[in-house]
Length: 174
Image (cartoon, rainbow, N blue to C red; front, top):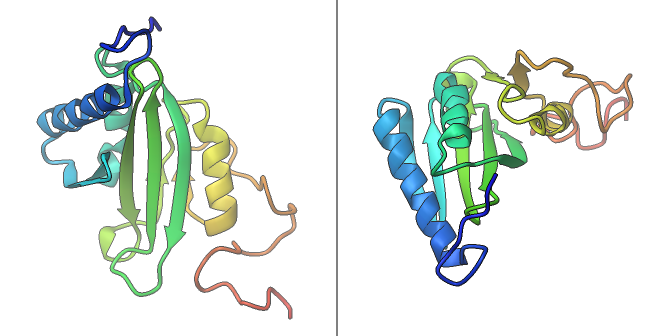
């Protein structure tokens, strides 16, 4: 991917990257109006909460649009909840290296939000393979369609998911 020329030189400035992220938010809202459930900005970071079924399409759009080029899935973070209408919240940090831009996508699943499964993004970003395996191993989020959803951190014979809120504080069998 060609490196864009920012006003300050070869790599766009942080301010230019934040502007790209804002344009990405508007582009997603325009292309997927029914899928965007919430939008927030905190300390210059843009976050879109999107409908679970639309996640892969939005991810493909962000990666393939030549003006946005979110080419790296930097991180996946999952949380488990007992006292909310949704059982899981999964956050994806995507980065456009050439644009010096980052954007967070969030989905909620389980409970009143519907099935506790989220479509895999391994077909969009190869790094989703290990990121999703880590979150499944720690929290128990099921990434539907993942090619190898197996333990990556815990021993193969480990029971349960240690970062779930209903996991025994003393551990299994204590």
